[in-house]
Length: 86
Image (cartoon, rainbow, N blue to C red; front, side, top):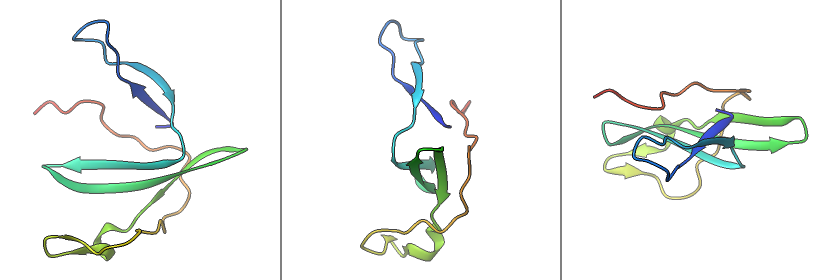
């Protein structure tokens, strides 16, 4: 990130076109479980990404109700795999 792929529709192999991420959240799942959640904050100087401490909100069978607050330091970019080979 700061770019996300807007899904393409030209062919099956069309992975999309990079576009700037908007304010909101990025959810990263691993083995069908939420592994990482980041809040995207947008300002005049650019986007920043803030981690949410999932362990703080996790409970048996899910998460505590209500909004989860971002507490991580501001990151200018994050690296995530676009495809998993498994």
